[in-house]
Each structure stands twice: as structure tokens, then as C-alpha cells.
Amino acid sequence: MLLQKLDSPLAFDIAKAMMDGFNRHYRLFRTESARAKHRFETSDWHGQQRAQRERIEFYDLRVRECSNRLEREFKAGEQPMEVWQQVKLLYIGLLVDHRQPELAETFFNSVTTKILHRSYFQNDFIFVRPAISTEYIENEDPTKNSTYRAYYPQRDTILDEIRRMVRDFELHVEFDDFERDTQFVFEALRGLFDHAHLRANFQIQVLSSLFYRNKGAYVVGKVINGFQELPFALPILHVASGKLVIDALLNGEDELLILFSFARAYFMVDMEIPSAYVQFLRSMMPRKPRAEFYNALGLAKQGKTLFYRDFLFHEHHSTDKFRIAPGIKGMVMLVFDLPSFPFVFKVIKDYYPPQKDTTREQIRGKYLLVKQHDRVGRMADTLEFSEVAFPRERFEDELIAEIEKFAPSQLEISDRDADGHTEVILKHVYIERRMIPLNIYLQEAFDVLQQDPQDARATAQLNRAVVEYGNAIKDLVAANIFPGDMLWKNFGITRHGKVVFYDYDEIEYVTDCNFRRVPTPRTEEEEMSGEIWYSVGPKDVFPETFGPFLLGNDRVREVFMKHHADLLDAAFWQSHKERILQGHVYDVFPYEQEKRFRPQRTDTQLATSI
Image (cartoon, rainbow, N blue to C red):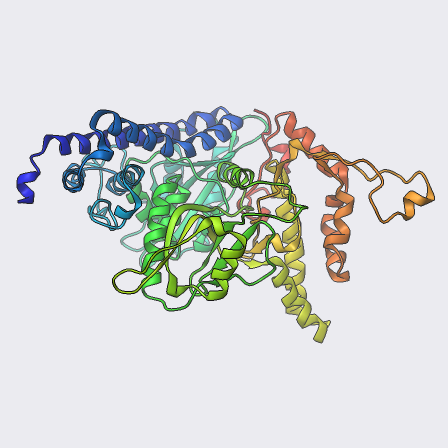
């Protein structure tokens, strides 16, 4: 019966229009990603930043275009469910030889849920699970645009093959000293594998597209020798002369995980078959979820799809309950988590204390700003969901009461179904990677040091946290971001020991702020006053006043003043603001300075102009 219905020309036309909409989206996405090569070659850093922002908006624009077309031409929202069942089956047929079937399925879901009522979201009308496998999808002609290239050097030709590997990317900019840099790569690489015993399978594999982000282009690949596989990446940068250098060799899973961190901007990569890129990257970083690879490649909607499938799978196989997240409660966000799941859920409250002069729309605007901005490894990426349903029995009563009190407009509890179950439906929620709040991380060190002031581990933990905190703020400043609320509780520690900012409701562009010194008191009354006696504009910032809020602990103050005293000086902030306004784009490295082949080179020796 169903097979007979598949002859419906209306259903086929809808399926074909949906596929046309996705193909247009991915064609535009890929074209913009491919243009990153030219922007890199011409040092068009502002153009690169602009393209990053605009590309993020591509998906929603194409979904809206496709939905409007389906309504206009086929009155899609008025079609019976039998037609939609046919549409999905016919759409699957169009995916059989497709190069991006997983992305096309997600696009189908986005368009369908925009047209249909949410009661249909979990049934046969969308792809709850993938229908088409992405295993072993590859180009028919492996000599053209293959996912990766393989090089098979002998012991005496490794350096030559490294040079051929880099040249094959055909960058149209001269290297400052190509032979020198590739010699650096060769010497760094051969210390990492048994080059005295090259096995029969010895090879170097590199993904065919460079990975572009900020002011860098990255070669990403791995060395295979016997049972050993060594992931690596080569950052290629411009120097002041306008020429290129290979700046470092990043190697091993941990260093590549930092490069592909959830706290960094998305890469621009020209991929025909994204699933093949993800598969290659997962072979180098098996601990990283597939969802985060799609995010890192700029395919955020696919990342959301996979994240949500992973979450549902985890929810099905766990029994713990959602709870109010540990730590100091925020004034703007209500935060909860599932202890067994490494993410936190954030809901915007309906009302805020008087000192928080903001609105829901403004807060969402701040989170969108972060999504579109260069996060330089210091701001956590967020996944944004609407109309998310959870089983009511998985929520602690205290958490439900908290939501009912502070965000009632965001909460709906469904009627009981036939099995007696109810659902908690949240109208809008942000989801972020869970980190250890910096104030809790520091308190752990304080507690130990109170018992033993000489404890080396606790001392190192405190010192590292304070230094990293200052580094995080300075990286944010370099990216033209003023955090606003710089209290320790608004920062977290990642598993790699990096400090990341995650409270965005007060962030501003550095260039929009007015950094001032506190005026000298004119009278004794002003000097002794407990109130602010000088005028303060809405965007005025007084960095010297940060100290009393941040440096109450003597040990913290000592470390902070040793490494980051300049953060309390308005001149530091104002000088960065002026340079950014002049068009300067700072270098922020996703690796430590000691990894660089020429670590003595300073930022001023790197290309900085547009």
C-alpha cells in the first residue's frame, strides 16, 4: 500500500525542493569556506572574521528560504501526514549517492519542524536516527579532491616528502625560508617516532584542505609507522615581511584537542565529504565526540543534531536526576546539570536584581555575539535549543521549584500520557561543556593550604589558576572582548588546565568601552567617602577598582601582581583599544610559546596589518 503511494508527484516535488534547498546551502557554505585560502594569502584578517560571522548565519537563512518555498508552492503545512511520510521516504531515495547525507537529513529535520507542529517531532516525519550510512563515502576519482593525501617516504627521503606535502597545498605566497622551516618540522617529527625502524606501512597522511582560522592555516595529519600513529598539525603564519613561516609542530592527541577546542572559533575547511573529515579527525582524537568535530568544522547544526542524539542515548542509559548546578547561583541565568553528563543547561530568568539592567533579548544577543566572534580559546561555545522535552521524573523537585520561581515563562509541564508519564518542556535553553568553576578550583587549593601552607601541589594549583586567569583576560582583550563581570565564579577550568570564560550577559567590545583612571579626590570628604563621588558613564570602566573584588587573598594577590598587574591599569586596556581601532589584529596562539620553532619572535614581528 505504502509503495503504491510513493508515486505521488506532490510528495516527490516536496522532497526534491527540500533537497534543492540543502544543496544550495552546502554549495554556498563550501564556497565561503574555500575562499578562506585567498583571504589567508592576502592577509585579509578582517575579511576572515566577517566571513566567519556570516557563515554561521547561512544555515538558518537557507532553512527559512526552503520553508517559505514549500509553503508558497505546495502549501506544505496543510498537507496530510500521509504525504509527509511519502516525502521522507522519497527524500531517503535522493540521499543514496549523496556526498553529505547526514547534513541533508538534518536539513530535512530543520525544515520539517519549522513547518509541522512539535507533536510530530519525535515520529516518522523526521530523522530521529540516520537513515543513510556515512561509512566509506569517498569521491569516485581518488586523484581529485580526495579526503586525504598519503606520502610514502623512505628513510632518506622523509624531508623531501615533507616539503612535497606542504607544496601540494599550493599556497600562492612565498615562504620566508621554506628549507629552514621544513627542516625544523623534520627534526621535530623524527624525535617522536622510531625513525631508525621504518615499518612496511610507514606513511604520512594529511587532510587535503588546509584548516583556516584567525590568522593561521593548519596542515592536519598523522604519521603511521607500524602500530604507532602520531597525530600532528603544522600552523602556517604570516610574518611582517608578508611571507610565510611554519611556526610549530603540534603533536599528540592532547595538543590537537586544544587546537580543536570547544572554546575556539570554527575552522574554514573546503570539504566535499565532511563525514570523511570527521572520521579522519576521530582517528587522531578518539576521545572527542563526533558532534564537536562537526562544530569545529563550522557545521554547527549537525553538531547539535549529534549532541542531542548522544544526550538522548545517555538519558536512556542513566538514572540520576537533573539538579541545580553546584556553585554560586547567577543573577541572570538559572543553571542545572545531570551529574553523569558532562554539560550544563542554562535558562534565562524572567527577572533580575536591580543592578542587572538587561532584558532577555539583550542576553540572547550577547550569546549570539559570542557564537559569531573569535573565541580565541577563552569563551565556551554554546548549543542553543528551543522546546526541549525531558522526563519529569528525572528532575529533582527542588529544581522544578527553582524554575517555577525564577523562569516560569520558560517552563511547561505536559499532561500525563497513557503510561502516567509527564514531560518538562523548556522553551529556550543553552547547553555548555561543564567545567570546574574557577572559584571552586581556587577554594580547593585554599582548603589544603590552610592545613599545610607549604603544600606544593596546592600551591602549584593556585599559581597556575591565577596566571591562567590573567592570560584568559588578556586573550579576550586581544579578541576585542571585555568580559564585564570578571569575578572568579564566571570562569572555569577545562580538563587541559585552560581557564575559559562562560558568563556572557555583561560582555562588551573593548572598543565600545571607555577605560578611565579613578580621579584624584579633590577634598578630604571625597577621599573618605564610601560612595562613588565622581561621574560614571554607562560604558566607563575603572580597571584599578578590580583589585578589591578579585585579590582579597594574599597568595592570590602576590601571584596576580607578579604576572598581571597591568590588568589593573587603565593604560593597558586603552592601548589595546586604540590598536584594535587602528585595524590591528592580534595573534592569539592555540599552543604554548615554547612550541614555536622561533619562540623568541615577538608579536610585533608577526604580520599585524590588514
